[in-house]
Amino acid sequence: MILTDMSFGQFLSESVQQFWQFTGFSHCEWTNLVMLVVGIFFLYLAIKRNFEPLLLVPIGFGMLIGNIPFPTGMEIGIYEEGSVLNILYNGVARGWYPPLIFLGIGAMTDFGALLANPKLMIIGACAQFGIFGAYILSLALGFDPMSAGCVAIIGGADGPTAIFLTSKLNANLLGAVAVSAYSYMALIPLIQPPLMRLFTTKKERLIKMKPARVVSQSEKIIFPIVGLILTCFVVPSGLPLLGMLFFGNLLRESGVTTRLAKTASNAMTDIVTILLGLTVGASTQADKFLTVDTIKIFALGFLAFIIASSAGVLSVKLFNLFLSKDKKINPLIGNAGVSAVPMAARISNNVGLEYDPTNYLLMHAMGPNVAGVIGSAVAAGVLLSFLG
Image (cartoon, rainbow, N blue to C red):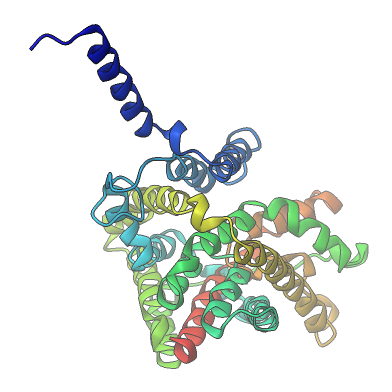
């Protein structure tokens, strides 16, 4: 049948209208634009300011992916059952990725600094006050206990732990909690130094610590075995994280599984980091992310991070009251009690060098820093024990 001019024009018009309905422009709202700007800002911080690019580039680009508007039912969105993004997001929603990240962390981390000076573990433990302080504040602001636990774990400055716990307690908060945790981890160079200067005197910043003793290989091999048994007997709910952390460390230190340790700490960790960052970013769909609760989560996460960093520094000042002059600890390493390895330890070292170019604190700061990794996982296990 030959179409008349009128029918052809009508057909063309309807085709254009139908095509328009499938474009992002047709479904775009101001909230999508806001989240796209946030994603671009994350990319700016990562690429131009070099703030944790391995985290913020995948998260920032994931935000762009997650906030391209589209009509429902196309099975392309991260929350649409059966879509590729939804399948990849299962690693976050079901807590698969965090234990794999912990395996990589264990395989790349030398716990020698902690074994050389075990009392530094107490600093890592004190930094976890940020978690429990934020838990109380969250309850006071109206969050239910499960959601309060999700918000509180941001204080550990440990993205994988925050994702793992939130996936178990309240998966609806995953996007906000994960982005908050990783954002504050990336902003450590801006957040921690002012706190370190606020709570220390110039004399304290100049404290030089004795070189740490040499830790034997046997100690390093025994540590992950004993560490697993001690921590997981106390908090069995932390087994997925702690088990993988100590297993990865044993791969590193045993001396007979070098290939496995290299795979866990390099290729595998990189792959999981890409998938985790991208899907966490994509989960920030505007309609689910831009809520009042998200604003509360970011505010409480910031307070939790402040409390954790401050508690670490102040705990060192308290210990020094009971230590002899030649054994005093430089309180600048207290900030490293949070779980961000090795970023927080580098901040301790950098601030110390500002006041004395010969005072290298990196190896000393790694003690509380790796203790913070264990401490945040234990804290997550404790929360999961009475909330899960």
